[in-house]
Image (tube, rainbow, N blue to C red; front, side):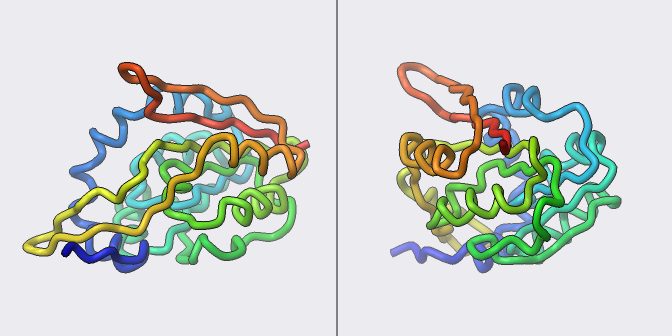
Length: 199
């Protein structure tokens, strides 16, 4: 039986293999996702920065860019990819290590799949964003953890499926104005990208 690991343990183990997944991850929604980034932000924060796959573009559009992740090894790879990034190691299933109303733009790509409680992160987004600030994230229809390999080890990283209607109800509860871009493949959707503005 393949062991299911926590995000911290799993991504520390998988960090050096992760770049091999970039093309697959990009295939879900990268053109649509990147098009929804704001042109400019004073303070931008990426939740679950990983190895910095999309961080360069966010950093170029912001005066101050902070990447947060639970995996120290992924953060080390992110800083190599984008040296001017400020990094913070934190468990993003808990309160965000950010002050109230201090962020202009909050981004989370392939992040919700790794958190058990979307209510908490959406409430925290509402807390840390400035009025008018933007929260950009995606949902994917992953219902089972994919099997990964690092060296001779095979494992899975704990993940969670959150239905779009459930997440949308939470966004409404926290008074976000939001739009969704649905990316389809064949007869189904592969990504729903939410661009949410704090009122």
